[in-house]
Image (cartoon, rainbow, N blue to C red; front, side, top):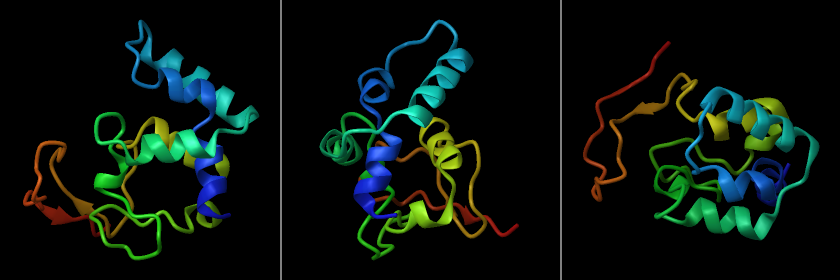
Length: 124
């Protein structure tokens, strides 16, 4: 599955508009987002904008999408070939729910421009 398909899959239009909205019941809201994303295509252009926006989701701070694996988080170039849709959606909605073995473990980096906070690698 190519990058465009992954972005389209994961960032469905209704999901995009409200992912950062405050929720009265976060667990219920995640279920609603998941159910919507499972049944609808997303918007590639809007997904790319959000992925690259440092003010919104800031995905590009940790992830590359060109196969270079040049960032701390996993490269997402072929992520759609590796995981089923449901798992990809969960990872977008709950990014810290699971961390892959071999992944760099860093503290929250939204304010670390030099990414100097590396504290370890998950080994198993």
